[in-house]
Amino acid sequence: MTRKFLLIDTYNLFFRSMHTVNETGDMAKGMCLHLMFSMINEACKKFEPDCLIACRDGNKSWRKEYYPMYKANRLEKLQERTPSEIEKQEALKDLFENEFLPFIDNKTNIPLLSEYMAEADDLIAHFIKLHPNDVCIILSTDNDFVQLLNDNVFIYNSMEDRLITNKAILDAKSNKPLQFVLKEGKVSVPKDQPKEVTELVPSDDWVEYALFMKCVRGDKSDNIFSAYPGVREKSTKNKVGIRDAFLDRNTKGFNWTTFMNSSWQDPFGNKHIVKEDYEKNKHIIDLNEYENKELDDYIMNKLNEPKKNMAGITLEMFFSKWNLEMLKRNIGTFSKYYQQGY
Image 1 (cartoon, rainbow, N blue to C red):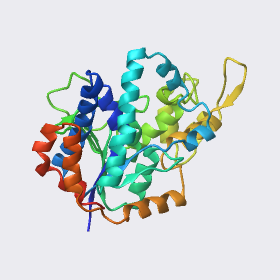
Image 2 (cartoon, rainbow, N blue to C red):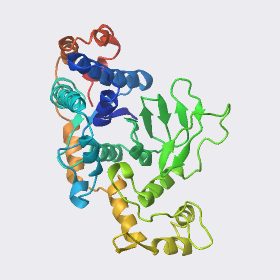
Image 3 (cartoon, one colour):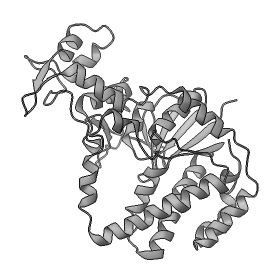
Image 4 (cartoon, rainbow, N blue to C red):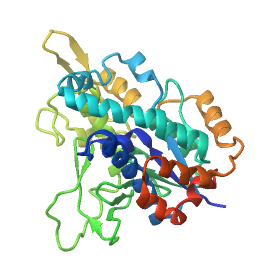
Protein backbone atom coordinates (compact mmCIF):
# COMPACT_ATOMS: atom_id res chain seq x y z
CA MET A 1 0.00 0.00 0.00
CA THR A 2 1.34 3.42 -0.98
CA ARG A 3 1.89 5.76 1.95
CA LYS A 4 2.31 9.53 2.05
CA PHE A 5 5.08 11.11 4.12
CA LEU A 6 5.69 14.74 5.02
CA LEU A 7 9.46 15.21 5.45
CA ILE A 8 10.28 18.26 7.58
CA ASP A 9 13.59 20.06 7.09
CA THR A 10 13.64 21.32 10.68
CA TYR A 11 16.50 23.82 10.48
CA ASN A 12 14.99 25.38 7.36
CA LEU A 13 11.68 25.57 9.22
CA PHE A 14 13.39 27.26 12.17
CA PHE A 15 15.39 29.82 10.17
CA ARG A 16 12.32 30.79 8.13
CA SER A 17 10.43 31.34 11.38
CA MET A 18 13.27 33.12 13.19
CA HIS A 19 13.77 35.67 10.41
CA THR A 20 10.02 36.38 10.33
CA VAL A 21 9.77 37.19 14.05
CA ASN A 22 10.01 40.89 14.91
CA GLU A 23 9.22 40.58 18.61
CA THR A 24 11.77 40.21 21.42
CA GLY A 25 12.03 38.20 24.64
CA ASP A 26 9.36 35.63 25.50
CA MET A 27 7.07 37.08 22.85
CA ALA A 28 9.64 36.22 20.19
CA LYS A 29 9.91 32.66 21.50
CA GLY A 30 6.16 32.16 21.47
CA MET A 31 5.85 33.59 17.97
CA CYS A 32 8.71 31.45 16.66
CA LEU A 33 7.10 28.28 18.02
CA HIS A 34 3.72 29.36 16.68
CA LEU A 35 5.14 29.85 13.18
CA MET A 36 6.95 26.49 13.14
CA PHE A 37 3.91 24.53 14.28
CA SER A 38 1.63 26.51 11.96
CA MET A 39 3.72 25.70 8.89
CA ILE A 40 3.70 22.01 9.80
CA ASN A 41 -0.03 22.03 10.50
CA GLU A 42 -0.85 23.87 7.27
CA ALA A 43 1.10 21.26 5.29
CA CYS A 44 -0.78 18.50 7.10
CA LYS A 45 -4.08 20.18 6.24
CA LYS A 46 -3.15 20.42 2.55
CA PHE A 47 -1.66 16.96 2.03
CA GLU A 48 -3.07 14.75 4.82
CA PRO A 49 0.08 12.62 5.19
CA ASP A 50 0.11 9.20 6.79
CA CYS A 51 3.19 10.14 8.79
CA LEU A 52 5.42 13.11 9.58
CA ILE A 53 9.21 12.64 9.53
CA ALA A 54 11.41 15.36 11.06
CA CYS A 55 15.06 15.65 9.98
CA ARG A 56 17.80 17.77 11.55
CA ASP A 57 21.49 18.43 10.86
CA GLY A 58 24.05 16.51 12.88
CA ASN A 59 26.60 18.23 15.10
CA LYS A 60 29.19 17.90 12.36
CA SER A 61 29.12 17.34 8.61
CA TRP A 62 31.03 14.87 6.47
CA ARG A 63 31.13 17.60 3.81
CA LYS A 64 33.31 19.81 6.00
CA GLU A 65 35.78 16.97 6.45
CA TYR A 66 35.84 16.40 2.68
CA TYR A 67 35.94 20.13 1.87
CA PRO A 68 37.03 22.30 4.85
CA MET A 69 35.81 25.53 3.18
CA TYR A 70 32.23 24.24 3.07
CA LYS A 71 29.89 26.99 4.40
CA ALA A 72 32.89 28.92 5.76
CA ASN A 73 31.39 32.11 4.33
CA ARG A 74 28.49 31.87 6.77
CA LEU A 75 30.82 32.63 9.67
CA GLU A 76 31.45 36.07 8.17
CA LYS A 77 27.71 36.77 8.02
CA LEU A 78 27.32 35.73 11.65
CA GLN A 79 30.04 38.19 12.65
CA GLU A 80 28.14 41.02 10.96
CA ARG A 81 25.21 40.75 13.38
CA THR A 82 24.50 43.48 15.92
CA PRO A 83 24.61 42.61 19.65
CA SER A 84 20.81 42.71 19.85
CA GLU A 85 20.51 40.39 16.82
CA ILE A 86 22.96 37.97 18.40
CA GLU A 87 21.06 37.93 21.68
CA LYS A 88 17.71 37.37 19.99
CA GLN A 89 18.91 34.72 17.54
CA GLU A 90 20.87 32.77 20.14
CA ALA A 91 17.84 32.74 22.45
CA LEU A 92 15.62 31.42 19.65
CA LYS A 93 18.22 28.85 18.61
CA ASP A 94 18.38 27.62 22.21
CA LEU A 95 14.58 27.35 22.20
CA PHE A 96 14.64 25.38 18.96
CA GLU A 97 17.40 22.96 19.96
CA ASN A 98 16.54 22.48 23.64
CA GLU A 99 12.74 22.80 23.64
CA PHE A 100 11.20 22.23 20.19
CA LEU A 101 13.36 19.37 18.90
CA PRO A 102 13.46 17.41 22.20
CA PHE A 103 9.67 17.75 22.43
CA ILE A 104 9.20 16.37 18.91
CA ASP A 105 11.65 13.54 19.61
CA ASN A 106 10.64 12.55 23.13
CA LYS A 107 6.96 13.47 23.48
CA THR A 108 5.41 12.85 20.04
CA ASN A 109 5.40 9.93 17.64
CA ILE A 110 7.06 11.95 14.88
CA PRO A 111 10.43 10.25 14.23
CA LEU A 112 13.25 12.80 14.52
CA LEU A 113 16.13 11.69 12.32
CA SER A 114 19.51 13.03 13.41
CA GLU A 115 22.90 11.48 12.68
CA TYR A 116 26.18 12.96 13.94
CA MET A 117 27.93 13.53 10.58
CA ALA A 118 24.92 13.87 8.26
CA GLU A 119 22.84 16.88 7.30
CA ALA A 120 19.06 16.94 7.06
CA ASP A 121 19.43 16.86 3.25
CA ASP A 122 21.22 13.50 3.49
CA LEU A 123 18.60 12.03 5.81
CA ILE A 124 15.76 13.16 3.56
CA ALA A 125 17.48 11.79 0.44
CA HIS A 126 18.16 8.44 2.11
CA PHE A 127 14.61 8.22 3.47
CA ILE A 128 13.28 8.74 -0.07
CA LYS A 129 15.58 6.03 -1.46
CA LEU A 130 14.32 3.66 1.23
CA HIS A 131 10.69 4.40 0.25
CA PRO A 132 10.74 4.44 -3.58
CA ASN A 133 7.06 3.53 -3.98
CA ASP A 134 5.70 6.00 -1.43
CA VAL A 135 4.78 9.65 -1.87
CA CYS A 136 7.22 12.02 -0.15
CA ILE A 137 6.49 15.72 0.30
CA ILE A 138 9.48 17.77 1.49
CA LEU A 139 8.57 20.77 3.66
CA SER A 140 11.35 23.23 2.88
CA THR A 141 12.29 26.35 0.94
CA ASP A 142 15.76 24.93 0.14
CA ASN A 143 16.52 24.70 -3.59
CA ASP A 144 18.94 21.82 -2.94
CA PHE A 145 15.99 19.41 -2.86
CA VAL A 146 14.98 20.08 -6.48
CA GLN A 147 17.35 17.30 -7.57
CA LEU A 148 15.21 14.75 -5.68
CA LEU A 149 11.99 15.50 -7.57
CA ASN A 150 10.32 12.61 -9.37
CA ASP A 151 6.77 11.33 -9.90
CA ASN A 152 6.50 10.51 -6.17
CA VAL A 153 8.57 13.31 -4.62
CA PHE A 154 7.38 16.92 -4.25
CA ILE A 155 8.53 20.04 -2.41
CA TYR A 156 6.15 22.27 -0.50
CA ASN A 157 7.40 25.83 -0.01
CA SER A 158 5.18 27.00 2.84
CA MET A 159 6.53 30.57 2.82
CA GLU A 160 5.30 31.16 -0.73
CA ASP A 161 2.60 28.48 -0.67
CA ARG A 162 3.98 26.68 -3.72
CA LEU A 163 4.14 23.02 -4.61
CA ILE A 164 7.16 22.13 -6.72
CA THR A 165 6.87 18.96 -8.80
CA ASN A 166 8.90 17.53 -11.66
CA LYS A 167 6.01 18.37 -14.01
CA ALA A 168 5.22 21.94 -12.89
CA ILE A 169 5.32 24.48 -10.08
CA LEU A 170 1.86 25.13 -8.71
CA ASP A 171 0.24 27.77 -6.57
CA ALA A 172 -0.83 25.55 -3.68
CA LYS A 173 -4.06 27.46 -3.11
CA SER A 174 -5.41 27.57 -6.66
CA ASN A 175 -3.44 24.66 -8.16
CA LYS A 176 -2.60 27.06 -10.98
CA PRO A 177 0.75 26.42 -12.70
CA LEU A 178 3.41 29.13 -12.42
CA GLN A 179 5.99 30.16 -14.98
CA PHE A 180 9.51 29.58 -13.68
CA VAL A 181 13.09 29.63 -14.87
CA LEU A 182 16.41 28.10 -13.82
CA LYS A 183 19.09 30.53 -12.71
CA GLU A 184 22.45 28.96 -11.91
CA GLY A 185 20.66 25.68 -11.22
CA LYS A 186 18.13 27.26 -8.86
CA VAL A 187 14.41 27.66 -9.37
CA SER A 188 13.19 31.24 -9.76
CA VAL A 189 9.55 32.27 -10.14
CA PRO A 190 9.14 35.76 -11.69
CA LYS A 191 6.70 38.10 -9.99
CA ASP A 192 5.06 39.07 -13.27
CA GLN A 193 3.22 35.94 -14.33
CA PRO A 194 1.53 35.49 -17.73
CA LYS A 195 -2.24 35.05 -17.74
CA GLU A 196 -1.79 31.54 -19.06
CA VAL A 197 1.29 29.34 -18.62
CA THR A 198 1.86 27.34 -21.81
CA GLU A 199 5.25 25.77 -21.00
CA LEU A 200 5.03 24.12 -17.58
CA VAL A 201 8.76 23.32 -17.36
CA PRO A 202 11.83 24.79 -19.11
CA SER A 203 12.63 21.34 -20.59
CA ASP A 204 11.70 17.73 -19.93
CA ASP A 205 15.11 17.07 -18.37
CA TRP A 206 15.09 20.22 -16.23
CA VAL A 207 15.54 18.45 -12.87
CA GLU A 208 18.69 16.63 -13.99
CA TYR A 209 19.92 19.75 -15.78
CA ALA A 210 19.44 21.87 -12.65
CA LEU A 211 21.74 19.51 -10.74
CA PHE A 212 24.34 19.50 -13.52
CA MET A 213 24.26 23.29 -13.73
CA LYS A 214 24.74 23.61 -9.99
CA CYS A 215 27.69 21.21 -9.97
CA VAL A 216 29.31 23.33 -12.69
CA ARG A 217 28.41 26.74 -11.27
CA GLY A 218 28.98 25.86 -7.62
CA ASP A 219 26.92 27.30 -4.79
CA LYS A 220 27.89 30.68 -3.34
CA SER A 221 25.61 30.22 -0.32
CA ASP A 222 27.60 27.09 0.68
CA ASN A 223 30.98 28.50 -0.41
CA ILE A 224 31.31 25.94 -3.21
CA PHE A 225 33.29 27.46 -6.08
CA SER A 226 32.60 27.12 -9.78
CA ALA A 227 34.18 24.20 -11.61
CA TYR A 228 34.41 26.33 -14.74
CA PRO A 229 34.36 30.08 -14.00
CA GLY A 230 32.93 32.27 -16.74
CA VAL A 231 31.62 29.46 -18.96
CA ARG A 232 28.34 30.33 -20.64
CA GLU A 233 25.20 28.24 -20.69
CA LYS A 234 25.11 28.34 -24.49
CA SER A 235 28.11 27.37 -26.62
CA THR A 236 30.17 29.98 -28.46
CA LYS A 237 32.40 29.53 -31.50
CA ASN A 238 35.41 28.81 -29.29
CA LYS A 239 33.94 27.22 -26.17
CA VAL A 240 31.41 24.46 -25.44
CA GLY A 241 28.61 25.68 -23.19
CA ILE A 242 26.97 24.00 -20.20
CA ARG A 243 23.82 22.97 -22.06
CA ASP A 244 25.61 21.26 -24.96
CA ALA A 245 27.92 19.43 -22.56
CA PHE A 246 24.88 18.23 -20.62
CA LEU A 247 23.10 17.01 -23.75
CA ASP A 248 26.20 14.96 -24.57
CA ARG A 249 26.40 13.41 -21.07
CA ASN A 250 25.21 9.92 -22.04
CA THR A 251 27.38 9.36 -25.11
CA LYS A 252 30.40 11.21 -23.65
CA GLY A 253 31.08 12.57 -27.12
CA PHE A 254 32.94 15.63 -28.38
CA ASN A 255 31.03 18.31 -26.43
CA TRP A 256 31.21 16.46 -23.11
CA THR A 257 34.88 15.53 -23.51
CA THR A 258 35.90 19.01 -24.66
CA PHE A 259 33.99 20.64 -21.81
CA MET A 260 35.33 18.37 -19.09
CA ASN A 261 38.94 18.47 -20.32
CA SER A 262 38.99 22.27 -20.46
CA SER A 263 41.28 24.04 -18.00
CA TRP A 264 41.45 27.42 -16.31
CA GLN A 265 43.82 29.24 -13.99
CA ASP A 266 42.89 30.79 -10.66
CA PRO A 267 44.28 34.14 -9.39
CA PHE A 268 47.09 32.30 -7.57
CA GLY A 269 48.36 30.70 -10.78
CA ASN A 270 47.00 27.23 -10.03
CA LYS A 271 45.77 25.24 -13.02
CA HIS A 272 42.34 23.57 -12.76
CA ILE A 273 40.85 20.81 -14.92
CA VAL A 274 37.06 21.24 -15.17
CA LYS A 275 36.38 17.51 -14.77
CA GLU A 276 38.27 17.33 -11.47
CA ASP A 277 36.52 20.36 -9.94
CA TYR A 278 33.15 19.22 -11.31
CA GLU A 279 33.50 15.81 -9.67
CA LYS A 280 34.47 17.41 -6.35
CA ASN A 281 31.42 19.67 -6.52
CA LYS A 282 29.18 16.77 -7.50
CA HIS A 283 30.34 14.75 -4.51
CA ILE A 284 29.27 17.60 -2.21
CA ILE A 285 26.10 18.72 -4.00
CA ASP A 286 24.54 15.54 -5.43
CA LEU A 287 22.53 14.03 -2.58
CA ASN A 288 22.62 10.59 -4.19
CA GLU A 289 26.43 10.56 -4.02
CA TYR A 290 26.47 9.91 -0.28
CA GLU A 291 26.25 6.14 0.05
CA ASN A 292 26.05 5.03 3.67
CA LYS A 293 24.57 1.67 4.68
CA GLU A 294 24.90 2.53 8.37
CA LEU A 295 22.80 5.65 7.80
CA ASP A 296 20.09 3.55 6.13
CA ASP A 297 20.10 1.12 9.06
CA TYR A 298 19.91 4.01 11.54
CA ILE A 299 16.89 5.48 9.72
CA MET A 300 14.95 2.22 9.69
CA ASN A 301 15.76 1.50 13.35
CA LYS A 302 14.62 5.00 14.33
CA LEU A 303 11.40 4.66 12.35
CA ASN A 304 10.51 1.43 14.10
CA GLU A 305 11.01 2.59 17.68
CA PRO A 306 8.06 1.86 20.02
CA LYS A 307 5.27 4.42 19.95
CA LYS A 308 4.77 6.79 22.86
CA ASN A 309 1.49 7.05 24.74
CA MET A 310 -0.50 10.24 25.36
CA ALA A 311 1.20 12.23 22.58
CA GLY A 312 -1.95 14.31 22.10
CA ILE A 313 -2.07 15.32 25.75
CA THR A 314 1.62 16.24 25.86
CA LEU A 315 1.09 18.37 22.73
CA GLU A 316 -1.66 20.30 24.51
CA MET A 317 0.55 20.69 27.59
CA PHE A 318 3.39 22.06 25.45
CA PHE A 319 1.06 24.62 23.89
CA SER A 320 -0.12 25.65 27.36
CA LYS A 321 3.46 26.01 28.60
CA TRP A 322 4.26 28.51 25.82
CA ASN A 323 0.86 30.22 25.77
CA LEU A 324 0.12 29.07 22.22
CA GLU A 325 -3.59 29.60 22.67
CA MET A 326 -4.56 29.73 18.99
CA LEU A 327 -2.86 26.40 18.33
CA LYS A 328 -4.40 24.96 21.48
CA ARG A 329 -7.92 25.96 20.39
CA ASN A 330 -7.52 24.17 17.06
CA ILE A 331 -5.55 21.20 18.35
CA GLY A 332 -8.27 18.72 17.37
CA THR A 333 -7.69 19.39 13.67
CA PHE A 334 -4.03 18.33 13.64
CA SER A 335 -3.12 16.45 16.85
CA LYS A 336 -3.49 13.07 15.11
CA TYR A 337 -0.38 13.81 13.04
CA TYR A 338 1.69 14.03 16.23
CA GLN A 339 0.24 10.78 17.55
CA GLN A 340 0.12 8.34 14.65
CA GLY A 341 3.81 7.67 14.01
CA TYR A 342 5.46 5.63 11.26
